[in-house]
Image 1 (spheres, helix red, strand yellow):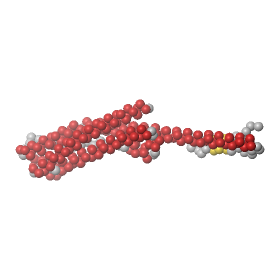
Image 2 (image 1 turned 120 degrees about the vertical axis):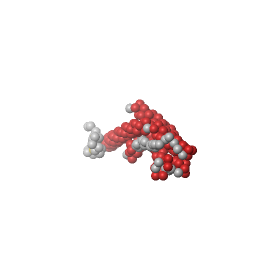
Image 3 (image 1 turned 120 degrees about the horizontal axis):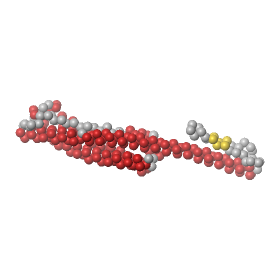
Amino acid sequence: MAPPSVSVSEDVSQGAPVEIHPPHAPAHSIKDFLIQLLTITAGVLIALSIEGLTEWNHHRLLVREAKETIAREIADNKSALERHFTDWDKSVNGIETSLKLAEDLLATKKSEIHEIELGFHLSSLSDASWRTAERTGALTYMDYSDVQYYAKLYGIQDLYVSQQRRVMDRTVSALSQISGGSDPHKAPPNDLERFRLELMTLRGEMLADKQLGEALLKAYNEALAKHKTAE
């Protein structure tokens, strides 16, 4: 006589719960009892294996999607940073011209420079994909080394964003030293001296912007190459 059976069913695609159907025939001997017990145990183990495999596959897809979106975000940030550097020399030239004007006026009260342009292009750098991966729990299932790698990259990005804000604040502060933005040629010496000092500080902030930006751009390139290799 064939031993009683245990059937295990699961609709993985629909996420239906695992169903275990115990044998209906009563055990008439210790042998029958052991056979039923073994069959039930095997069924439970199979059900748990299927459930574990389904969960593992879900986590794997979650991590893969998180890495894909992070890679796209890094590529977009890289493009934004490269556009920023195309205007960087223009911003520095504006600082140097303004500084020359201030020094001329302080020294001789006149200058051949009659127009200045102080401006700064902010890079729009996003960390939404990184934050989303953290909120959805994708980082929990990602390799620790990958999490550390991305955390370091976004840490550099945060430093750079803070540096850009300092440059912007310093630019506004420099402009505010010239009585409401009026003609520098008519500004009093005290205003010109403060204007000159702010410009010198701004020039230093711009050098820091360049150094941090180049480090971040290198990190972006390395991350994108790493992602492409892993595909």
